[in-house]
Length: 401
Image 1: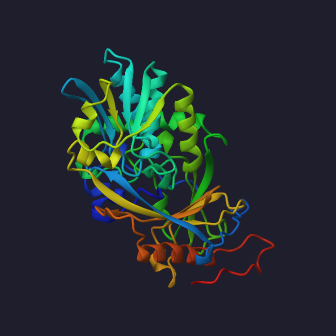
Image 2: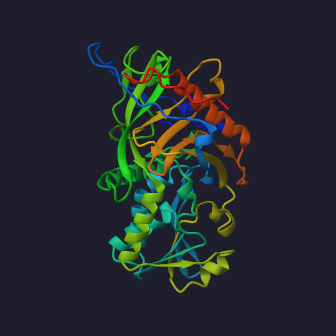
Image 3: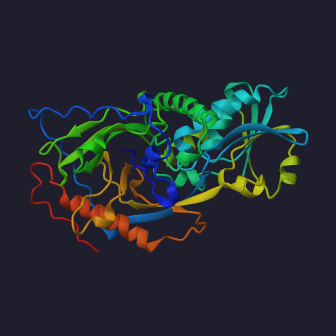
């Protein structure tokens, strides 16, 4: 039950895989996790304070989605070698160390050791670092750099299947690439846990009335990256639902992580050049003969990829609360919270991020006020339904607006 793998817009629901492919023995969901014993103390969670007057900013990002999944391949543009590494949907922060390593390995076949990287988001920065690790001198060319990249507007956590692929269109070859990228990225991100990169582990809680929903996660993912899920029984959690699913989640704080990556890239001798590319002719004008294309949604116009479409997502950032150090996935099914299902929350040092939107093929950066209301009101209802920790029974609820 990954908080961002249940995108429902335009057939993206990852939960629908069972209808797209026959289940083999390896694909069958694992047994329900063992419930906690009744003797264990209940989970106590500090209440998040949610109200409209606590909103500090709202952001919109356009995730680069390809129904058949990301592109990771080498090709030719006249005399230049172009290695494409784009189309990660909402999974760029999660997969980029893996696809970057695989792109850099492809680059080793080139005779030169100078490389141009197009793009300065998470995918471009990690590709640059992987090239540097293999002895390449790197120049990054980008129209925007942090804090103005799409990566800065992600939630973000380790969600390697978020908005990534329409399951019915994936191929065995692509799936093999994906699994390799997942393993590389998962291992690399573990090495980066700590304050310098803004990577950490927290628990995520998904309230539910259906015990079956605690069955295994996404069948695309190797077991070792899914995390142990615990089905909390009534009385073992603070939510109004019968059950809650607890699982560990890797959190990535974009505004710390991306700046640290830029520092690393520059420390190892790279240059960053602000430049916008309008056509392949602009790419041909570069002095480098080896180019790694990490332009994301920009590859639609630059390289003629008509399959690329944006998945518009927006975040609502609330005033930070240091004591809130857990995530949530989903709402509660009560009369006032019906619209709040399908929402998620991630606490960060720069604010508590509320999300849960994905609008397919929408290119605007305008705030969708109806979606904003759904997400905020859904989280208000979720908090109002929770039992406060001991000693805070009289804590007033924030007003609904």
